[in-house]
Length: 112
Image (cartoon, rainbow, N blue to C red; front, side):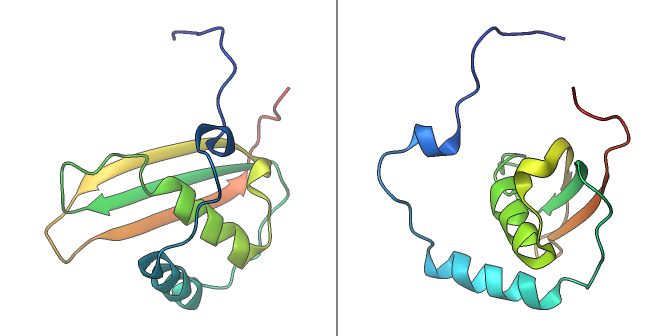
């Protein structure tokens, strides 16, 4: 594993000015909130496992993480600062068969 002695940059520090949700994102958020099942979360800290099914090989694996996480925390009433581990997988699927899979579980190894 390679370790870089540099402070990670937050999204808030990387961009100037306020960012606004697009109409497309607002529709996506409403749709996700409607189809997300009711679940009861276990105790924080959390590990989140994502699998994104993309039909376009050019999609970056990290492009969908922030929006999806923000919607999940809105639905399930947790703060994403409580996520200490993520596992992300990209799967290529036929056009029209795109999907998002996720699991939120208690991280068994407590962060130091």
